[in-house]
Image 1 (tube, rainbow, N blue to C red):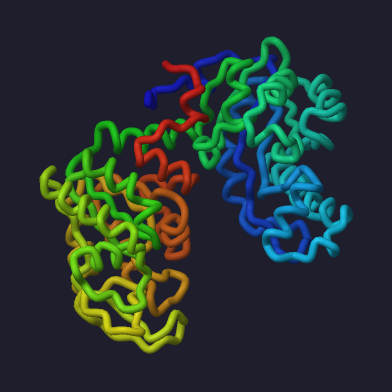
Image 2 (image 1 turned 90 degrees about the vertical axis):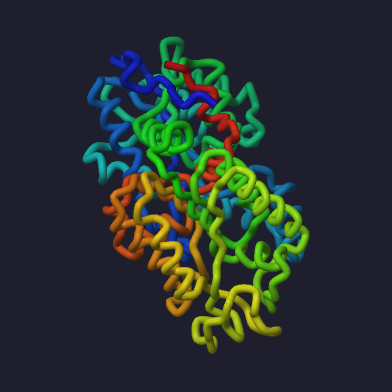
Length: 426
């Protein structure tokens, strides 16, 4: 995939209407109060928005939020699949589920951050959105309703994409700045590029520069640290990085599948038995490619999955029955931290243990600290590892923290990202 894409600075937006895809899929308070609990994604879009407004563009921002089901019948079916009694599922409850995912809180917070009014449309491509887009002047910004309120959004429906593009008019421009959604071919992330010249915003440009640069031309040695629970979700990433990396470090729950594949005892640890053969293939491929593949040499085990579980350290592959591995052990911590000291580039995706329990967060904390002290280019691939460095106070010491967990994973896997592929090449 070509990572060298045109940006907002490569097109003239003065006096034009710009359809701007953002990632405003922010976490909300679960009490239905409409309070945004973390506005990081809104803040991440500010540089591009401010640039467009300063250039005199009329900005039509859009984003999805959550997973609304825009059809009552489909909503009933999905709820029934979750075990809800169909008789209790009323149209009123369905509408309430949609109301909780409206963009009013985002518009209010964006207004505060920009210090100017954000005009909010009552729909996505309906009469209100069309009227407000038509009246929008240069230097003004409006926000459409949740793009997933439209049935055709997730299906990349050409008719919906055409209507969304139509809001920007004949001379309009499409700017993509929602990295967290570029791995999905939706109407608002890819389809609109069939109707408008499409370029990236500053956020996506930064992601392409750092992650794309690390994959295409890394400062060596390139060390990849991969954690998380499942081998199945990372096998494509491991496979692709074995073509690029000098060292690959495996931690988290998926390490126990590798251990079991090598004949180790893993007790009640997380195990994907169907993926043991693939794990052995990856071990062999690393040998064939001359890539160092580091696996845990010891592990912290617990008698139950709980923050107050009894714990002890055992050698990797020697976990007794009824015990489970919840973190890497002290010898492994030293091995992994030593491996990043002289790295040129480090990519990290996934915690080393059950990070949500303090007792089993030691490995993850140690890796985060080691990355904060290295002179390497450090790239954190979103998701739990991004949350870890934020919580531990190391975010400011990392070179780049990705805003898209799923997108960064697919990026590292070497997959084409539809929301990037549709942008104009330099």
